[in-house]
Length: 135
Image 1 (tube, rainbow, N blue to C red):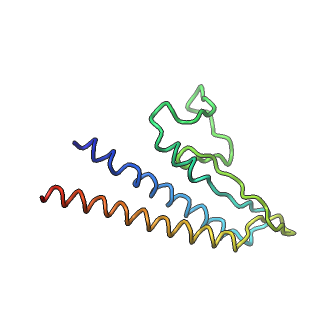
Image 2 (image 1 turned 90 degrees about the horizontal axis):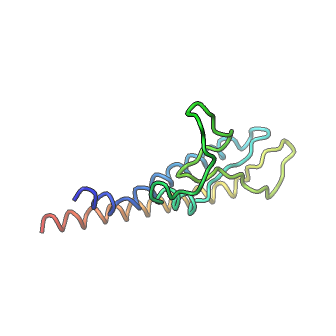
Image 3 (image 1 turned 180 degrees about the vertical axis):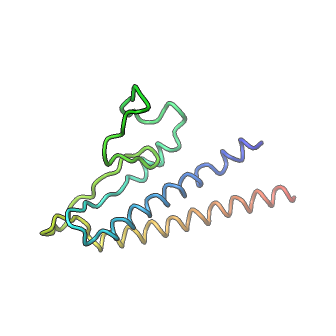
């Protein structure tokens, strides 16, 4: 029974977690808008969600480590299994910073709206479960 509840809520829970991680990434881009040589980062949300929802052992392949002491390659923190990507430069700056504030604000607002939508959907799922339990 609990396993079925987990399966029922798993998609929205995973999407919420990835949205929260993406929001932090976008906030970091905005916070470093004036940092010289800072490169804006983002994730491909759909591939991250697919990787996170893939059953164990079916996630996209990655380099195998032969020891737990081996380090990950720098800059490859992987929310949901998707690699962090560098945002393409739309308007270069003299100091090497690639943060475009219009793009970052747009992506930040879009991600926040989608986060709220996921919250609304998971809240609706919980309400329907509660209604079913109470009869």
